[in-house]
Length: 280
Image 1 (tube, one colour):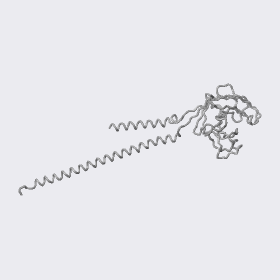
Image 2: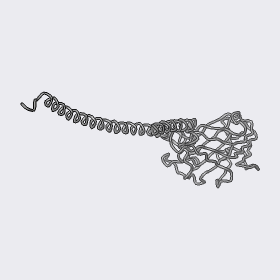
Image 3: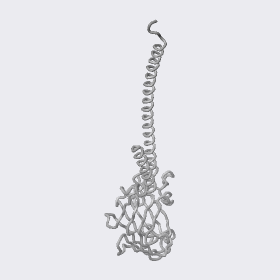
Image 4: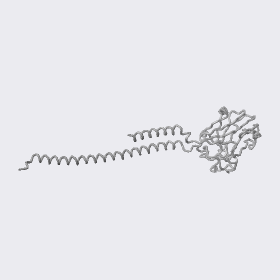
């Protein structure tokens, strides 16, 4: 009886642990990684001058990755912003292939209602020289500046798309037109599409992203496998126990059969003695 109670208490504890493992799977599987201005990274200003524009940009006096810029109208699509290069050589960056969400602590001031966030991914498969400025794929998303709440904005990497102009300009094969994040060499924050002329200020204080140790599906598969293994173990123990009980019952049956045989023989002997005259 005591063993049975221990088994039931252990089963209840395991059920509670399984519920907790499912309920708090995000906290158990995710590790938060932070990119700070103090990290050894190369920060550059982005400006349309390399495309023939005449906009101005300079590093701003602020804590973090800061840029002050002014858009002028010489270039058809004027832009400016900040580029944080994880590898100045554009060769070896961050593997964000398992990352879904990224949080940016960003101060923004300017007349544009949207800004672009770009994660540039380097891959020799694109057929471009790795050291070329535009060789890294332009994975980007354009967000409304109203979504920057409390100086923080969260973006879902699954909503990023590849810039069409990059695909067309470098004749990239269609099968390479999907977003990739396995070797992100640059994070860029820039003015949005058709940004109005005027003054802009970007200050990036830090970036956070979650790295998942195991895919959620595999985590659930592990939990199910544990329960399946315990169920098989329980059935095996029950089978062994039943076999033990059957063997014990067989021994008891054999013993009873032997006792009955002896009793029958003794009974026959007594009957014979009772019905037989010793003198005759």
